[in-house]
Length: 240
Image 1: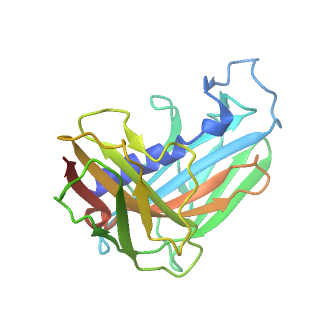
Image 2: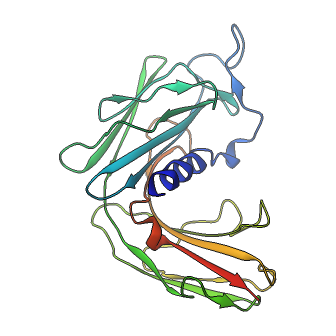
């Protein structure tokens, strides 16, 4: 459960490229933007499994220019190679451990003779919903969700809060592109009209680090998440 959550969360995060447009495709032979064109990088590391036996899902997308996927970069985290998988059109590594002493993640990307790098902190955090309680039946009108975080040391950027509906694919709150909750904010009010009576929903709160990648285009980042405590981070409820 925790490993599957880590994989899905990291993949969704890596595909957060709304600012870069769609229609991305592999670099065609002799075509596409030339080497040295602006590079956009979105990499995500999600720690899953258990505290004693962690599993790290690393996923990422590189774009040359605004829409051309890069498939020939050399990507590594803590010296572990992150290969490009053509089937899913992203860099992906889901099995071997990448933890090193010092609790840090060191990302390096080599492309066109340039090395891009970023360093982030690993952390363990427990964020539990304090309301509504898991399994609750709540009113379909607006509701406030609150959580009790344990703040980690290091560079926590904020919290990502989201709600999805099991019976309505594509239903989600808040909309894509919503900024992170600041570290000191531990609640969110869902607008009236978001929930439909009789349907089941899941709310999730996720601590996030977003480390900018120097030399890449604006918005490029290494994102670090933690799904080790995914059971505490997810609250399932039904609207009425």
